[in-house]
Image (cartoon, rainbow, N blue to C red; front, side, top):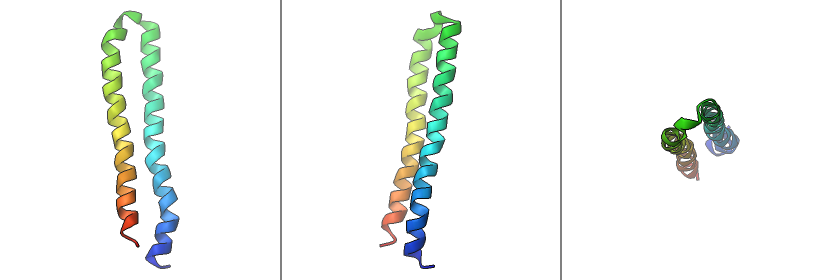
Length: 77
């Protein structure tokens, strides 16, 4: 198998793996955020800032996966 065909086969797998990790992380984080607010509504003001900062970090990890895939995929041509 030549490198170009291997890149075509590994490309969708790499993008899928780069998307599934942050997707699961955001899902778990959002569930914990809403559960904690449902239990103690008075901490919503403090938790919201931490939630959005962590949300940005998790999304950034997913973007790193996509960018690294596209950088590797563009070198096969």
